[in-house]
Length: 413
Image 1 (cartoon, rainbow, N blue to C red):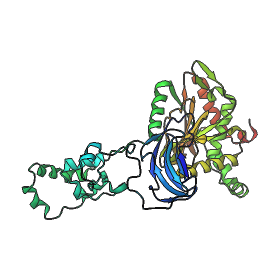
Image 2: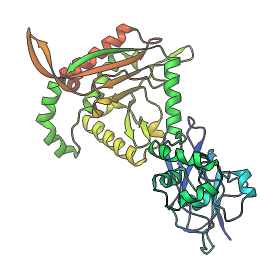
Image 3: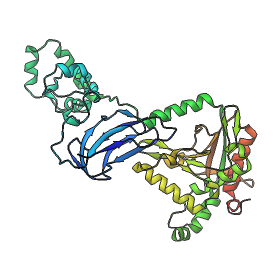
Image 4: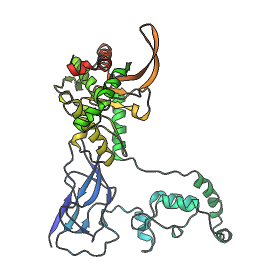
């Protein structure tokens, strides 16, 4: 017998632990090299762990939901074994963290396993576990199984059984229709959501956050984009969007005011000799911020290509830990969701963030006349411990000036 170990990959320094989400295989099932065995969630991304070799999954050392560390053993693959019928209980008994340790010992072997939330709901509704069909792993009864049963009309014979049954069951059953009409579901927060919550609270408590606002006339950028978008796409194979202009405008301002690109470490100010801009991207798991490295050295085409790649891989969960680590400044574009005005929160240890919003036609005064222009409100939140109001305001004005005269971005003026 030749056993190959499956271990948690090396996590980054900023990630202390991860959670096992879902085993794709059961013990005894055949696996192929590079076939996905398990998904592991960190506070940044979801990692897919493949099988290291062809063979049979001989053991699962940690169950779904378990917390794991870098290089921790989670499974083994027997490269010489013959596949057998998969075992129902894949995780080891001592580490499987049974859902109901006390009840499981006393219950009959054939009794279904009930998840805690489902057990509480059945107790409140007077439902016997034997009457619920479990759809969870190994036939486990989940809360959704109970809710589905409550929404299903009860059989005609059931009211006749209630008088002969426990007297206390009747008032509980009367609560079922109301519960079915107003369902609740308690689920644990993902590691990503927990980490986002921690960082936002940290930002609010540790930073002296102020926000300065300005508006920019996007007509020049829109005209330039309309003129060259077809030739741009034909040459570079990527559409010319608006984010590359905002990135270039941010770089333009950060070069003039390097304090905006700096950060605080203890009692020291760290001036970064590079500009790494985080681009906030929505994903099915929540907000992630992949980093555009050396943004000041990239062309419009390179920026557009990387942002499009970030967005696509964020949806499929393929971003790497390295791509989500670091950054000296962040741009958050709430305009893609319809936001008109907001105050973005700084992403520590950065000291500032630019909020971009929807471009809308609005009446503005221009040369003594009221005209309609496509306007965009820009908001820059900054850490007042490090950045004075003057520098923040001038930096945001520099961004607006660059956007209203895009030639500055091309000529680096």
